[in-house]
Image (cartoon, rainbow, N blue to C red; front, side, top):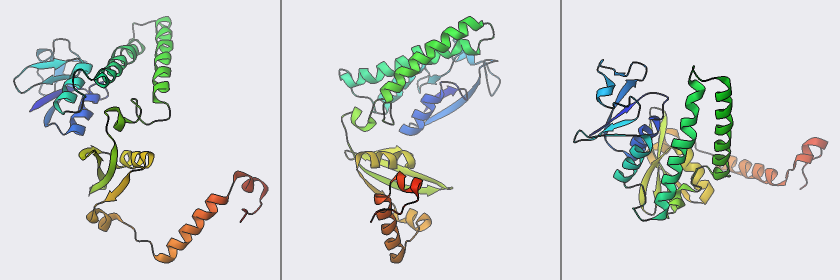
Length: 243
């Protein structure tokens, strides 16, 4: 089992999310970055002499550091990255490294009490330009690499709402026959975006489903027809929607 050394709110959140999303079995050890200690009082510098997070201790005791490297290792271990030699792999790593080196690191001076206002002003402008680039790459899509399900050459075919536990729904995406865990809100948004089918487990429907009587179905249909016909001018002028 691997162990992730992390600090809340730091960039170690990215591999922490990836560990949960991919289902890799792991432990998590919280690091106090100010004192460079672990919760048991031991020195974190014995784990990572750099004193930064994340660090990932492997089963054989070896330790990996640097966020971009840890993310790549976890992606490979979970089989989520395209193989070496595939251009898509390097396009993904290109973006990971851009965020790590050009964007994330540029925030550090803003939280450094020793940095003067002129320095902070420079980095604010630097960050703004990098965020503008990220915004352009995002475009109108929900993910940085565009439609995340086609980045790797696959297509979303179905979404399944699988569980309801403690008031939280769980879902999986079916991508070319392979199940990928996802948050229901993201899964449904993706399904609507690409036009795939959405299914819900019967026990989830029994617990959380709302039965709509046939009479109400008619009312819903009438309301949909109303929405199809209405336009903003109807609300401005007070006129009835045209039939």
